[in-house]
Image (tube, rainbow over all chains, first blue to last red; front, side, top):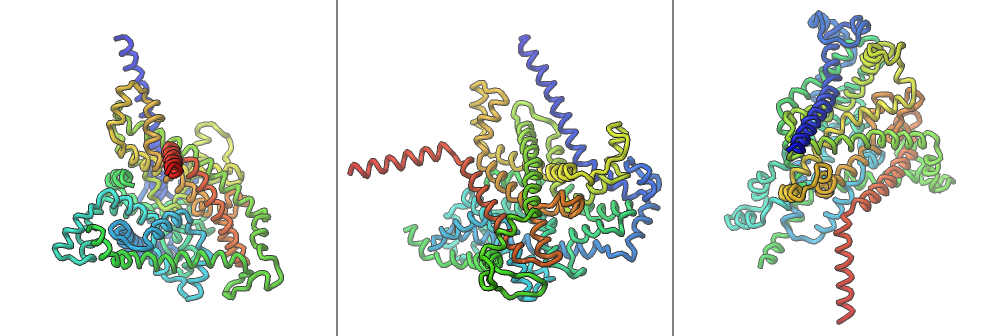
Length: 287
Length: 323
């Protein structure tokens, strides 16, 4: 009995320890963004006096001042948003659809060469994208396609990592008898895939959609190399301009510029967060 | 009969795989082969597209490769990359495992863990370019939030110029990487644990296994395949590090944060457009990554399964010898 009591005490102490660590890490996740948002509404002079503040005494006035700094400077977050949106949305749709289709072709059909394709997918998964970069740039340069968003979109049709993931998922969830019965009902193979197999894959698609969208949205390396035309800049490139010397003394504006690019992501995350954390869990069990 | 049906539909297998295969050939395989080829040429300069192999201009075939390996800049970039990756990866894995253990513990159900998970994962969705510039502002000198904190806590009386010391720069980059990725790793590991059959844990509990024993002897072996996935992707991602160091420090602080990917980009697109040397550097990195991945896969392989396969092979051989 006494022993049990001691055990209980220990576990309460341990639980408090767990909470303390978790809260510290939660603060660590939030603090940089909090400082950023508050400083976006503070003047450069105030920030120089005290770089951290819980709130700003004149938020709207300062916000307008910080915003005015961008006038006449090449800072166009809206262009970045539009371009990033076009690229990320197209990449996500193409990658999801064609990866599912490829995974289905390996999983549901017997054909010569499918074993080779399967092995190839495992192999090329390990090739980092940057290894292809010089050759890819030279190829795109030769056909005069730099500064074309398509060049960042079309390659998504072949996403070996995702095919691998989708195949793992299909292995566990697709029974060929469903496909057979669709055939008996006279559905074409293509229609069977679109109307029966794709809906079956929804959970896997949801997880991969989020991962793909985030990584495409945040990608800096490839766009930085391919896009030199300012009207084609993606959001990360636009953000990178904030590092320039013209903003060296404009602290408030730098924070504001960063906040503008973060705010939409955080809003979307608030709505999708539950789904993201659980969706990942769902994908993981199958993968 | 079933088999016959599959055969008659086999052409759809080809058709459905065509878009993937075509795109792969054009946008992945061709550029890889092209990169390898360029590595053996003297391609440089803006606008030049003609390929001349090194022997044809009187140079040894592997000139670019030896140039890269013996270049002090590449060696520095490589050691930087490896250091930053290791310093970020060890705590990342440790904390991801710790939180996984806490959040999946069946006996002490932590309340509010949903919120914690969401917050821990949050930094991962933010554009890394933004994160790097934000941290640059946070570590500002002579005035910045971090300097304010340090002086308020009395750790240092004078403002610290964080971006002036090479080891501090690398430390901050490693910290940012850790901060952005531990949540992602945790979420993946938790997903793996949720997939384990609960009966296994029940059995461990009945056998009187402690929390730590359950985690190390039951949970970790059960999520081996996800651990491999996390390790491999982290290795590839870590050795391709670019956004954070490029945006945080670039070439400043005497290249303290130069990574191999930054080196490749600098060679190819800044200054003298040394495409051939950049290509050689990517090929070298590819080979290094491949070898490390294979070593990792070898050490993480399922030993019991490998043993079993070996025994089966021997049995088959013995059976074949008997007949």
